Length: 289
Ligand SMILES: Nc1ncnc2c1ncn2[C@@H]1O[C@H](COP(=O)(O)OP(=O)(O)O)[C@@H](O)[C@H]1O
Ligand SMILES: [Mg+2]
Image (cartoon, rainbow, N blue to C red; front, side):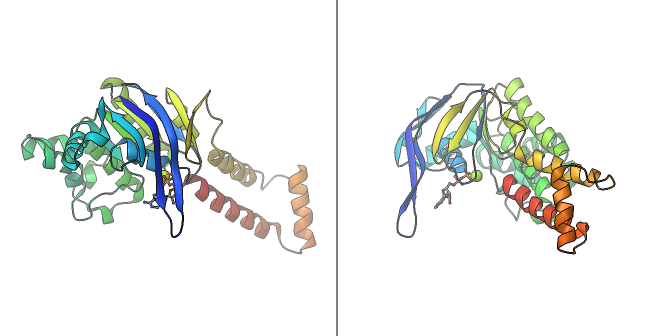
């Protein structure tokens, strides 16, 4: 379904060029669900853009559903994308002057032979499936990040894509809505046999996939086995533990030394805890990007 042959991509900086994707080779079979993980800045979004034909490699070949993307004109590429590809962008990319339902409908409005009535009815069904039917007439600016994300997801399903690329589709969602989204993506994968490629920071999302690929400094490798619980949830649970232990006597050595520190600096322990939790917040923000 998707094949990368020695694909490289670099971007020109102010005085040097940065190699963002380095000699990447991999194959994804039809109907597979593949997760791509890796640190921020390692080239995951760039890789996804190359795979979907949104960007061109400097070297190598991307073959999508048996077609070499470099052999296609811009129009042919656009046709291929609107007939076979779904894409959920990291920053949604909704059109600000269109309502939620119009944003979902737009790919078909541009490319399909269906009547406007049929397209809007299909769009409405998709809004229902992402629990956004009550926001049908809202504009993107009137929606929260999580709501925009769900509209973007509904839009990516509108053409029943043979292959769907999702760039951190659960990053802006709480656990409940994240689960809803992953269920929708998995249904598309299982019931319609769509190939699914998901970039994610969330280890529990990656562990749902058939295979996990790891991007590191522009290089891609296959990961053996599942990932440990994500650091983000570890951070959250350590904050939770701290909050719960507030009423209890401080017994473990770390807390004891913190108490010592607080008394040394004549600061109430509360203030100290606040600083720590601020730090953790900054950290957890970092890990969700
Ligand atoms: N259009 C661009 N022009 C210049 N540099 C870019 C561009 N897109 C991405 N980069 C750089 O490429 C690197 C990888 O980016 P990206 O693919 O977005 O990583 P990830 O999705 O893993 O966080 C980053 O250093 C980023 O700044
Ligand atoms: Mg990215």
